[in-house]
Structure formats: structure tokens, C-alpha cells
Length: 421
Image 1 (cartoon, rainbow, N blue to C red):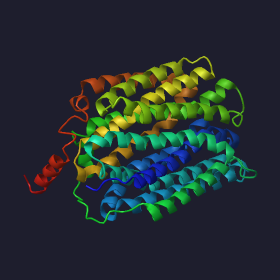
Image 2 (tube, one colour):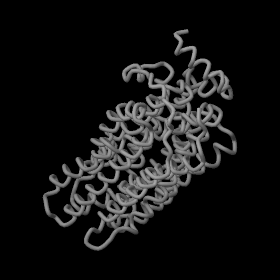
Image 3 (cartoon, rainbow, N blue to C red):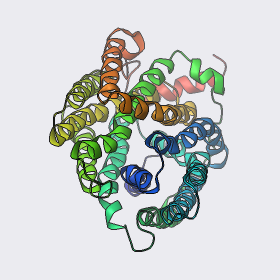
Image 4 (tube, helix red, strand yellow):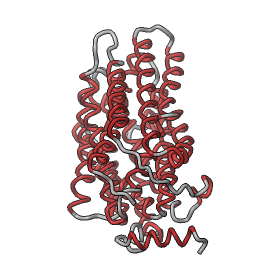
């Protein structure tokens, strides 16, 4: 196993930041775009749905391709898809803001433009995670995965603040999308020039796609991860609409308030991933429990928030919990499989992280019918996940099976498996 060089990790870290900046920047201005063009709220939430479905379908395919073709080419392909998708989204939004077509036409084309990210942009995530997993010891992997997740958290801080700065004449709310596309292209050049690809042959044996989801080692982590991601999606997608309604201001005037609330949540996530996990040396088992407990409390606060600042506080507490839970299930799943299965495990993790977005319109519809509804439902789901983490045998022993420091033992087991023992 080759060691992960600091410069290589910095590049992968930057890739995660760039993707997060674009995604959360788009998410922060999506309510304003919809209401300016006249697209109903539930339809705007559905903009991400087709992309999420394609993300879930394509992630295992790209993971297999990264086993064959290498991690770096797939990371570059994913960045290319992200850049093209953002460019197309910017063009569509510009057309919608200038009323060049009826809103149903704008919605359909916007949906397809965003779908390019799920179709091609999904190539980078499993390749990035596998690149890190192949170059870290079992003992270090939890913290490295948390740091990589922290990159996404940093991007979620920067994205909502950058987005308003890129609102330019003529393109208006489409300006951030053009800017994010350009940033992704710059990152693509950095990966092409400076990220090394290993020259040694890679073991390509892997779990079959169907077996991956049924494998008893992974299934509890994937169930847990899907439901946690679903709760985070529900809260994030309704946040902007809730702030606009609570402040009773125009969508554009609310952008600054939305940015502050999203930044507060992202900073709470960073506190978990870059600070508390390292300070207290928290392993997957602890993260799985504390994560959903804190997220449950945060959702209850949000559900009954009387004012804007209480919404911000509830969202920050929930994000602190998600900042524990997401690295917990990612690292736990990675540690539960052998080295030659890392890319496929990463693909399954990427799929559950994206698949939940398909049902985002349902949360917005529930919010329109009963505003505390999405957050109360989240609290029930998260409380159930806490019980699941305490009772399920696999989750109770997450990260503790085997000797976490015995890389030679792991290699011996892999060689034994190759020999048919």
C-alpha cells in the first residue's frame, strides 16, 4: 500500500471543496431562482431529483471504471461533468430570468442540465474516496475520511457566501453558476497537472453490484447512511423556503439570511469533523450514536422555532450531528470491507448519499402543508436510527473488528483470500 502524499490529499481536498461550493451555492439561490422565474417550490426541489437518481445508478459503474482505468482519470471526468452541468444550468436560468420560454419549459431543461452532474459528475466521488482508502492505514482512515468530509463542509460555508458575490448584470442569479463552472475547470487543470496516478497494477476483484447492497458487512451502514442523508436533505431543502416565509421578505432579499444560516450549519459540521473527532479520537461506533442524537435535537428546535435565529441555532445543532454521523458511517463501511473492495464500497456510499435527494420534493410539499412537518418527521427517523445504532451488532462493533493497526495481517488475509483459503 502506497502512502497518501500530503500534496495529493490537498488536491483531493480541494476537489471536494469545489464540488461542495457549487452544489451548496446552487442550493442557496435555488428558492430565489424559482420564485423569480415563477416555478413552484416543489418543482424547484425536484431539480436535483433526476440528477440524484443518475448519481445512484452511475456511481457503481464509475467505481468499476476507476478500478480498470485508474482513480485520477475518473476524478477528472467527474470534474468535467460538474463544470459542463453548471454551465448549462447557468444558460437555462438566464433564459428563464429573461422570460425567453414558459416556466414548464425552463424547468424541464433545467432538470436535464442538472442531470448531467449525476450522469458524469458522479465519477469523481467513488474514485476520490478509493484513492484515499488505498493509501491510508485502518488506524488513520476514520480521521482521513472525516477530513475529506470536512472539505465538503468547508465548501458549504464558502458556497452560499460566494453565490451572492457572483450575481452580475444581465445574468443576475445565473452568475454564480457560470462562476462555479469556471472554478471547476481550473480545478480540473490542477488534477491533470499535479495529482499522481499509481503505476502498480490494482486488484480488480470486487463484490458484484447486487451482492454489495445485500452484504451483511455493509447493509447496516448503507441503511443508516441513507436515512441520515435523507434527514439532512429534508432540512437543507426546506431551510431556504422557511427563512423566506419567516422573514416575510423577497427571495433576493433573503439570500443573505439564507447564506448566514447555511454557513452556521457548515461551521458546526466543520467543528465536528476537524475538531471534536480528532480531539476526542472518536471512532465510527461513537460517531454513529452521537451524530443522530444531536441531529434529532436540532430538528426538534427547528420545528418549533419562533424566529429566524432559533432556526439558525436548530440547523447548526443538527449539522453538528450530521458532521458526526456522515464520517461515522463512511469510515465504518470502509473499514468493514477489504482493500480490493474499496471502490465498490465507495460507490455504494456515494449512491446512498445522492439517492435520497429524489424524494426532496416530498419534503417541500410536506412543508407547504404543515411547516414543522419535515423536521418532526426527521426527529422520529433520527431517534429510530439511534436505537438502530445501539442494537444492531454490526453498528455496535463499527471499526472494532480485527486489529486496526495490523496492516500486515490485513495483507495476509487478502493473500489468503486470493489463494482460495
